Image 1 (cartoon, rainbow, N blue to C red):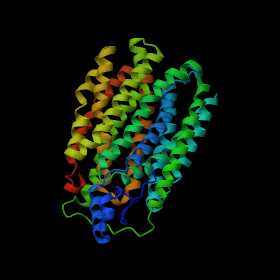
Image 2 (image 1 turned 90 degrees about the vertical axis):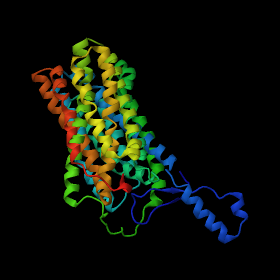
Image 3 (image 1 turned 90 degrees about the horizontal axis):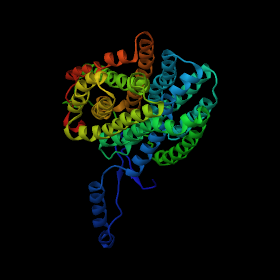
Image 4 (image 1 turned 135 degrees about the vertical axis):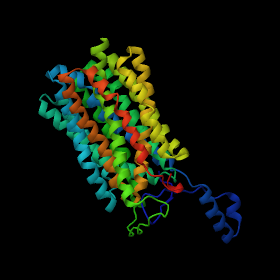
Amino acid sequence: MNKPVVVSEETLTEPVVVSDVASAAAKSAAKSAAKSAAKSAAKSAAGPAYVVLAGISFSHFLNDTMQSLIASVYPILKDTYALDFAQIGMITLAFQFTASLLQPVVGHYTDKKAQPYSLSIGMASTFFGLLLLSAAHQYLVILVAAALVGLGSAVFHPESARIARLASGGRYGFAQSVFQLGGSFGTAMGPVLAALIVVPFGQGSIAWFSSIAFLAILILWRIGRWYAPQITTKKAAPVHTHPGGPSSRRVAVALLVLVALLFSKQLYVSSLSSYYIFYLIDRFGVSTQAAQIYLFIFLAANAVGAFFGGPLGDRFGRKIVIWISILGALPFTLALPYAGLYASAVLSVIIGLIISSTTSSIIVFAQELVPHRFGMISGVFFGVAFGIGGLGAAVLGKLADHTSIEFVYQVCAYLPAIGLLAVFLPKLPQHAR
């Protein structure tokens, strides 16, 4: 992490360029030749800062592992405190709404003044939220604990997404996918850890996971030390519209379309992550631990799909990836409510692989539409994702109370059809693809 880096003076969202050590032949050459060779070597060696990307992705893994514990312990909380599905949905809403409300605010603030150590400070909120959740014996306290974990997420995502882009070396989709990969696998690990630790040892064992938060605090503090020297105090360069780029009106329409596409994707994923366990238990009579393993399989497929979506967007264009990843999942989501147990597991894997590949492309597409509002745009889209998930979970829980979990999945099966709105997305200039 202590490698020297060169950051563009115009914007913090430009990639880091990592230089290789000069060769022995260059050292022995004349000074003028050495300088020329060094410049050439630096240019050819431009690429992602992999150590930083690995660190921020691993931190994302730890962050989302802790967050996913909330949904994974729903069966325990439901049985212990006799909660209904609407109350379960409100727990998700308390967590997601905090993150959704604050992320755009955090992103807007850090656009003006970057905060390299805010990530570790925000993680402390998650640390205390987990401790409180492990000791909570009243419904209101559970809601407060979930909100504290959401607050940590609100601080983490906008600035960490900026760091991932800064370390991308120009491979923005790849960097976003590496960043998303950590979070997706962290989300997938929650049900497994809940099945292995929380279910056998009870609600109090959630406190053990505060050690994960402490590790994340240390890593993020170290990344903050790398990030701090990169912050420029120079005035940002004026924004110039690319002659081949979309107009401001088309940009606004495109942002609304991307929000709608993220709505369809995130609400469907939320329906599975929040209620899939109950669906499997009610319909097929599996145990809580077995249902959590099936949920892990779906979430792991999400992680794999999220990783490949970014590089595919770099290679073929983000618009085509968005088209395929959302509409491509529709036949499988329509089939899921009518499949048996093992067929449901297979379909959930296919759905996870396809539908999650759109996340990186949607976020990078939005960042490229408004490149000089990077933190705010990242915060809005991460926040919308969290907010839609939380609000959708609450609404779906209420619907399940009045109908059934199976009916909820029959309705949600049509959500990927919203992917047809991708036809309104503009074609970006070649350099922004």
